[in-house]
Image (cartoon, rainbow, N blue to C red; front, side, top):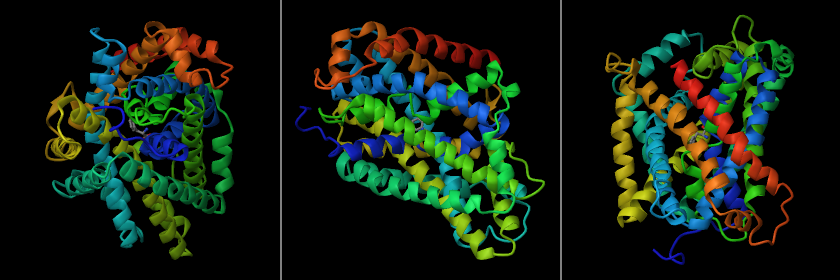
Length: 453
Ligand code: PHE
């Protein structure tokens, strides 16, 4: 397909909002606060910030330049930049990882959809055993599968509209809505009695908790949260125009992603601390078990406020998850469309159908298929391990080696400076990070994760 026929994002704002939409997701609102709760509050946040800006941003710029230079899906991009070399595998690994992540991520996205519906219907109000509620729901043989399927179809509906009329248009509506809801919820959460205790927890660094393992978790979290290492942002960048400033865009995306993650902490911790006896280090159950309790107990006297808070919170989760599933879907759709000459619409159907089947299996692994284990893990955990803990860090390391060592320095410079039109002061530092710091640091996470499991 010639460059002229290929779709492009229409505006700079569209580029930033679509890429930030990919980055901002359940990783920020669900996973980040759990990690902060378990790993020493502000101290973890500081380590996380270092990982985002010194490892995440350089790798993001690399993905951007690979995508924009080649104007192709992530698998073809490596073939164009490194013809007849094994580098093509990096792109293929990305497509495969995206497919796996989409399959299990949509299961959790489906849970958020069910919680949004339940919250709106008032089913999360009143005293209840929310642990039992959650465990029974995820183990149910059809309900979570149904919600996962609906979520996948919502994603599909955006993808088939195309890059400009689908992805860009929806990101431009959903991201501002998401940011507005976050702002409202932060204010609500701060105004709860006892919330200062939560703020103190979040702002007081406990450096005694920072061990090597915690540093590695922070790096892994930064990669997952910024959607790095699997070609998502490379695919989006293939739709960037010539005038996009790659460094600035990467900086803005990282900033928005980090602000949303920290704000989610500001929403969750003051709220959790306002109810005595609830624990902030509840792990993954935090948003599905602890928070429904908070909404009920803390707002016991003003139930309508609790109702509003809970509905808005789950709408926020659904929006965040949707902008991420769209970007994951696009990686595989663009690949099938461009590499096999299948129409975009048909390609999207193949991806949606395949992910619904795999997603159903992942969902059922919490219930009827819980005895089926691969490497000692249920299917959901196995997919998470293989993609987020194995393929993403490996992809991130290879991408930094590819840009730092393999690619012609002149090509990298031309992409980053838009053929010399932009003044980029840290170009050498950027190359240094890519050549030495990123591969070494990511290599350490990678080996460590493998040894731990
Ligand atoms: N960054 C997303 C999140 O934080 C997850 C994601 C990973 C999306 C990889 C796309 C690619 O939830």
